[in-house]
Each structure stands twice: as structure tokens, then as C-alpha cells.
Image 1 (cartoon, helix red, strand yellow):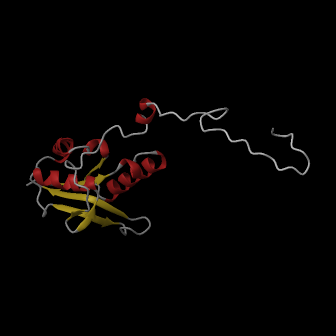
Image 2: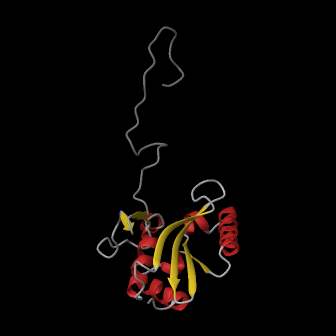
Image 3: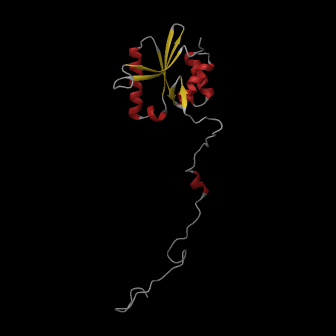
Length: 170
């Protein structure tokens, strides 16, 4: 018995079989519980290419690549599209990189492609708005647009968004 060993006697270990006594028996998790941890949407790799993306010789995100492709569908040419244009020192402190600058007839458009992770929440959202205001101040005649994931979710959505904002290229 446990706790009643004689002095000098070796104690005897009591072995319980797994699943008997006080030990709980492991069970298979409920499917509803495990489904909470699986992705809601299964990505279809055959629909979305998985980078690396290059636009006009520069590395690009998937959203930037989508914007570029849809601008080309709308008739914008490489002569009227500048990708990754530096202003105010570019990547230096206080500077910015403009994702797209479009030169249309009598109009300049600036499109900032803002992924939700880096630009949509909290202080990041405030920084994004401030950066757009700086662009507008530096380029007062330009129309400045900040596009987020919801504006560029699919090619069709991106095409409709860009058609509404910048129209057809020349």
C-alpha cells in the first residue's frame, strides 16, 4: 500500500493502466471545435499566382501586380505609368515612394496600394492618411487615391475600381 511502507523496505510503485482510475481517457476532438481553427477560405493556388512579382523591373506585391495588370487592361501604357517613384528623398526619413503615378491627358493620378496589414489599423492608418496629405501638398494638381485590399480583392473588383477612379488610358 502507498504510504504504509516499513522502515527500510522498498516502496512499491502502483501502476494504473492508461484510461483507468483517476486519469481521463483522451477523446477525439469534436469536428466543430477543430473547424474553428481551419481557414474559412481555402486558397486556390491554380487561380492566384504566388509571386515573386515584378512591375517595370521593380519588385512588387501581389496587389501592386494586380493594379498594374488592370491598368494595362484599361489601356494605360508603360509610357504613361511610373511605378515606384521617389519623392522627398524616397526611402530616406521623411521621404516616400509613390506606388503608381499615371500621366493622362491633362491629369496626373497617384495611386497608393495599401495592404491592410501595413496600412489599415491604428497608428498605421493615421500614418497612411498623413502620407496621402503630404503627397497632395507636394503634388497639388494630382488626384491621389489610396487603395486597400477590399478595393483590389479580385481582378474584376480591381478593374471596376480603377475604371471608376482613373478611367481608360491613352
